Figure 1: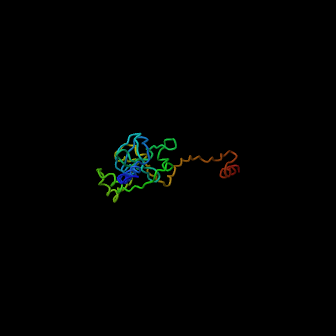
Figure 2: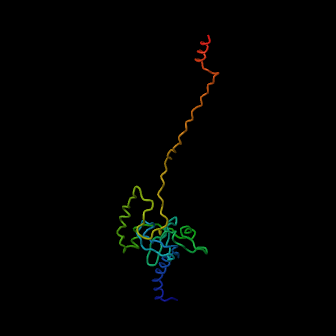
Figure 3: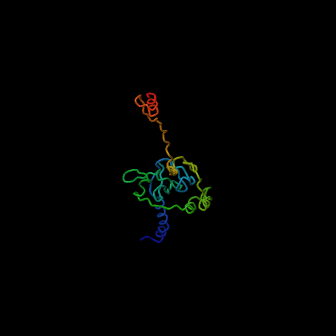
Length: 205
């Protein structure tokens, strides 16, 4: 039988073992150089730049599996799921297209909670309330591809395209019509007209 000291040590280690198993997450690796962000989107601050092939542990992804919360070495943050590969059914697949089939859990992102847990030592931690209470309004005419805040360009996945305005199509200009003169009947000597016939008959008398 386990003595009292052994049971005490097991009780002390069990929560740590459970936490370590939960923190391990699902093993994966970066498909290419990727930005580790402080939130699920390129507008969030940059935590780190991960090289291609860097191992990560997926903690979960947003619904739709577009961005995933990962552990990458000592850092934690969000990576675009199109930049994460994982082993699945004897193949290497992107989490973006296979996350649901792989059983990756779905997470919600709450900025204040997430930043309070992981980023209290970061210089942009104090911006959290401003981001929560007063999000920056979108400009009236945003550029089609605004640059993300630092990081490697293109390492956050494809940028969304602005909507194309739909309206009535402009009228197409019509080519000018060529005016063709209407042909006039030619008058021959047999058809002198009423006035000339009267003059001819008068002269004959």
